[in-house]
Image 1: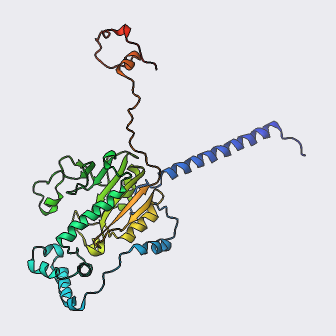
Image 2: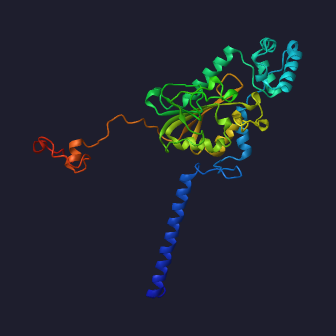
Amino acid sequence: MGAPLPPRSRLRLRAAATNIAYFLAVAFLAQTILKSLRGRMPSSSSGSWTSTQTLSDAEIDEVCQRYAVPEPPPFRPEKAALAAELVQQLATGGGIYAFTGNKTFTGLMATLTLEERERIAMEASTVVYHTFEEATQQLQLEAEAILKAAPHSDLTILNGVNVGVGGRQLHPSLLGIDVHRGRPEGAGDAVPESQRTANNTLLAWADQLPFKSNSLDYIVSLHNLEHLQDPVQAVLHYLDMLKPGGGLGVAVPNWRYTWDARTDATQWGHRWNSAPEVACRLHLKYWSHLADLEQLNTLKYRMSYDFVLRKKGKWEPFPQEFPAYPTGRGLYCKNKFIGPSYMPPPTGDKTIPCPAS
């Protein structure tokens, strides 16, 4: 063994070891903080986000492509000429909404199958023409699908919000959120009568909801997310507000059976091209560290699809037990009672015992 180190050398080594331990502790703390903030980081001005993906882009595309909606089959031979004519009319005449009042047009559409009408919409880049019965069923299926986000079957015990509620009040216990109440005067086609909201609607923008983190049991959104410029950040915003085990239920249009958002120049229009495989990809790249993709594209019709994200963690219901608040007597005995400064002692003050602390 060598000679022992002099006292000064030992002090220097001890100081160096202390500095190393300090820097390691700081590095560990910084890493912990960054990990806790993952998923809450806002998008940059260039439109990029912090990816948390564990698969390569090629692997993600391979996984998600299986959720792509297959194209409708070809037109029946006896309907091919009619279908081609209708596609041409829609493509050059302003889309389906320009023809909904045309009885000749709707009569011809009624002679086609659902899949033929879906193929017409795909080729003309417009919304699918649905019969009244089909449209009614579609609305019901969308509502049923996204309500599966609720972590409990009894919705009355939950705190849930319906983002972009419009005229679709899904359940009395759901708090509706939109940018208007009722139907604004002079709204015209911008807010049709079907989008009239309840008078107790909470006014807020869909990507700026006024709720604290881990406070909501579930969030539903019907045909609203496609109107937001940054769906990645909006979903991260929703997941932040959900309790562990809470759910986000979303129904959005499939762009191939509505229209291409790249051609949409309207203020309240679509701002990105949504499809089941796109939702899958966004989940794997940006949301999977916070939530599981519980369901995707369970609807019957091609025009829209659904997905449900379940925030990781165990869900706990709102506690119904009354909190252990002190009584008025208890507060008085602890000199914490609030009242007029001139109040004399209460009647029987000396005979009323103070509760045990």
